[in-house]
Length: 302
Ligand code: SF4
Image 1 (cartoon, protein in one colour):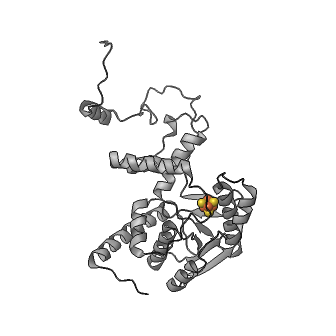
Image 2 (cartoon, protein in one colour; image 1 turned 60 degrees about the vertical axis):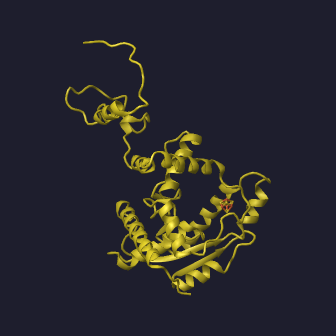
Image 3 (cartoon, helix red, strand yellow; image 1 turned 90 degrees about the vertical axis):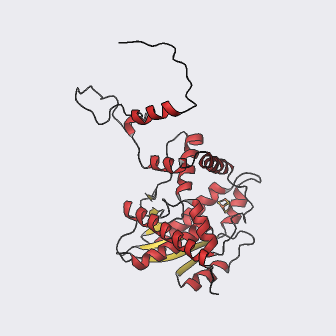
């Protein structure tokens, strides 16, 4: 059935689509995600993110300077109550090539994981394995996942808080066996834009709690933290995402990334010098911030 929109909704939808398309194109170009002749396997879970990814990729496909093919793939993991008809109906209406792969990973997970324990990590590993196998079967050259900017930041904090690693979720990666390239075309897109777009487009969302698993509590806590920060300090999430793209190994402490041991004074300007903070910016902030009320204990005049 043809969707009808009010004039306001049309304007908002157009704006959002342009924005998402611009950000997705930027990510595709910056990471060389899609090349001439690629066959992109677009993984569709039935959630807002993957529907949006497919929709935007199909839109980009029409105008892109390179030719590429898209196949939507959904894994029916046999969770009780999974509405099997929803995705085939939607994909047929969109006239997209698609494949539904049926595999009862739900029973495997239930059998292996004791009641009450979180099932997501085994479930995700099984799903990832199936997706790789499917990509090989259909000769897909790229596997596209619908993770967005907030997913990347949440993973960064999860790894920092619980894994002791400064590591996020890359927009492009090679699988462990070296056989597949995974891309995340929505890497630059904001979750709230995706949510608004999905709502306006009225995608037939399939709920993600069918398996009955507890939500991933640590990720939920970090998501909440980011949302609260962004409310209290507007723009903070944007700044943090810029930081992920602007790494300075000489000002971290990983000896495998930077030759700290070999450092010698140069007596000439040194590009990796003491830029721990931008002094001008810091001074301006220092002079205006009410929170800087530290006492000067001792002053020395040289
Ligand atoms: S929420 Fe359920 S379906 Fe999703 S990863 Fe976890 S166990 Fe798997």
